[in-house]
Image 1 (cartoon, rainbow, N blue to C red):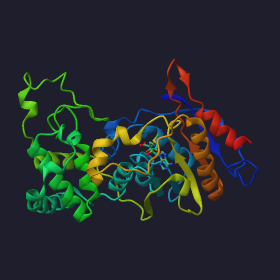
Image 2 (image 1 turned 90 degrees about the vertical axis):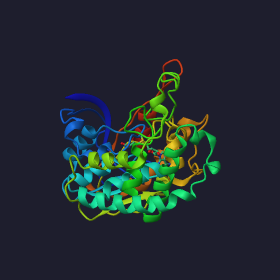
Image 3 (image 1 turned 90 degrees about the horizontal axis):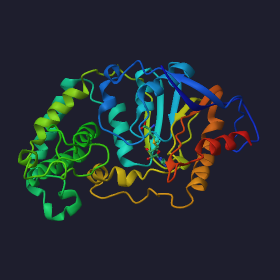
Image 4 (image 1 turned 120 degrees about the horizontal axis):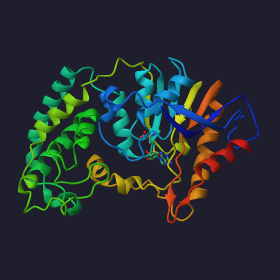
Length: 352
Ligand SMILES: C[S@@+](CC[C@H](N)C(=O)[O-])C[C@H]1O[C@@H](n2cnc3c(N)ncnc32)[C@H](O)[C@@H]1O
């Protein structure tokens, strides 16, 4: 068992707070079980890495404690889709959103996977056949040099052709699989040796002269084939019909009626730069980097407060009686141990 200080905000009917919710309790010591290890999670959770990802056991614990089957669960900062996928696995309805295209792609891939390994393999074969036809169109001279630096040219051409085939066939799941094996130092991945989460080349640790085999062409298809098999090692059960994933700013989150619970982890005081940290995978999705994601500068605390105020005010009134607003809040430590105040900021919105 792991004990963690988190903020659980149940909602009653009406109040004069900024969020339109009447808080009955706020600050709780909350205990969640980490017994259920990664080895027993459905394997879709491991489709691809994401910085700031919530632990699956934490999402599961919040969900099972505070919601019932067929409830509608909303996650407006869904990231790689841990809360949405666990919700679907446990027969809840899901409405999720994020403004990061990589987050949206991963969450869609997890909520709308192929029905079986066999179905996935058939889609992989068709996508591969199209990728072969698109190979001749890949002109590496049009690719930014910072992207080219990560790959052997032939590997990059194949990966780009497969990417184009996924986009043309609207294959979110297979594109997510490609991004899941895009960069790492292990042989099952496509890049030259690099880190897995945030893309940095590891050419000092693995110099080309000493490790020439790590700089050879890597076959994209055989690695994708293995990746798809891994994604179905512990398959998800059949999901309920209502699953929606929106590509939007949480401040403009869609109207949802009769919410059973909002379960979400907002950006840590806007400390992370989700474009910089996901840049290689983001570039692969749209062959450019997104422009609409603002990185808060000096006014992080104010930007965080404004964001939380508008998101909570939008969603809290739509939570049904005895529903829950569960915020998992992380404080980032900056400079000389200066801590953020994200929990205090959110608390003030609800308690005013
Ligand atoms: C802490 S992460 C969420 C992690 C997620 N729970 C998971 O397990 O992957 C915060 C997320 O908020 C998203 N985000 C930040 N500001 C946003 C905004 N204004 N609208 C929508 N999403 C936003 C980021 O892209 C990031 O995915």
